[in-house]
Image (cartoon, rainbow, N blue to C red):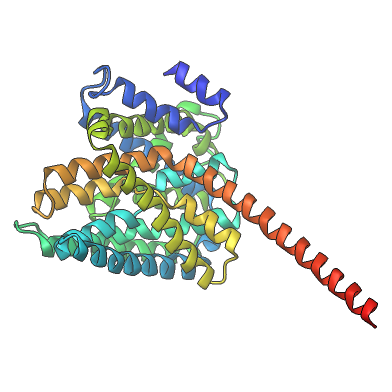
Length: 391
């Protein structure tokens, strides 16, 4: 894995790609050194939890909430348009409505972990663009709850509705309102100021407590960690929390991306490369186009809109959950399940390259428009000179 990391460093590529490729090489479909996929999934979940905890500590809650219009309307618009588009395509291929809806849900959801990593790698997390992208990604995570409810209604088996998730969402909103009015104060923050060992344990307790409470109410553990991070950030004397957990974050987040790599079945991809390539390109293109149009309608510039859309273009890890529900509910069959897993994993792997392609397009487009402008000015000047000569 070290050689892969050094290679990515030399090529100036994000380390996330190195981690995913390491998972492909070391996983059950590669050398077989990593054969416990469930354990890797759990360790990877810890990485996502820590990542969201850090993001919660770093962002400005008022600033994030100021983007509610873009986040909520943008997400709702994307879900509706993608669902309608999927139903039209599904009708052509004789898909059931349930399968079309499931497909649209998987396409819509981005990966918050990947989005944050991409923004961090490009130093955009704290910018306006980064805050908008993050806000949309968080709302998408919350949208998983009604998506699961809808798939439950489609289910051919008895699956209980996530009523606790609805209660959890309400509590989530109440906590945010309270935080905006009354910042948290920790009475013991000065006591642990110079005790590094105690700082590490307290930091872990802060993070995991939020995650476990969130899971109890049916929300993702990462969302609970995010709220816990916000709680910690409202106290000025808790800068030590970030320093204490940074090594753990790096390690476990790497394990998350390695887990994604483990899911990639090279043999299946080789045998079905045409279908997989079409689906990967389709997801990148359709997400970028739809989000760009929606964001421009919400008063964002074309440059901002297309960049945010490129960052959000991949399918997310919640797609694995929805696909699993769809498979167990007999909405899709085994082949579609394996195809979906491969496509989602590949979009996560190829996200950095897609952003580079979009950036290249933006540069070419800018140069092309500049050239058109210069030619137009020259034509105007030539036309004026011609009129003067005639006069």
